[in-house]
Amino acid sequence: MSLYLNTGNVRFFSLRTKLLFFAAAIVVIPGSLYGVITLSSSRAALAQVVGRLLVEEAREGADRLAMILRSERERLESFATQDVMREIRVEDLDKRISSFLASVKRGCPFCVDFLVLDRNGRVVASSNPSWIGEREALIPGGPSEGETVKGPFPATGSTQTLIRFTVPVPDPDARQVLLGRLVALASSLPRGVVF
Image (cartoon, rainbow, N blue to C red):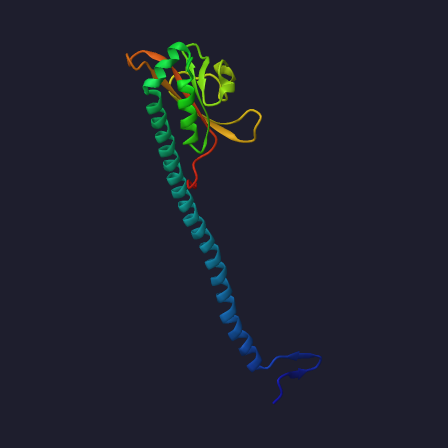
């Protein structure tokens, strides 16, 4: 018996060939439907899992950043309460505050400058002598009152961005009286901090 039945000009497949095509269709069509459904649902599930992981990483990064900012502010507050800060009264004539700020800057790899402002907002001491005598309005981040953390904002004449920490400087003899403010300009986060 031949594979094809010959009825005039039209040739039909044999029963065996038709059964093979039918069996293949029974396996291939549901398999491909299952594959398409699985692929689309796995994409949605993967997107959901990745989304959760990104949110978790963002929270951890925000917590690390908050901890770093808080510790730097506390460190700056401890510098502001040093006895050497009483020199603000005489506008740091013997440059004790400036040399203290320069040594603090050497120990801080991501600090750009430290400045001490008097009550009138004028720089009386700095780790960078070119700031001395300038008004607060010229300092990156502009004027600020009290204890603040500002930024990031672009540094003038540079491509880096800065964060500005400002803490009040209390009088070492009478803590309720403020002598001025201590400002730290930081360029970036310390090494090893990855977000």
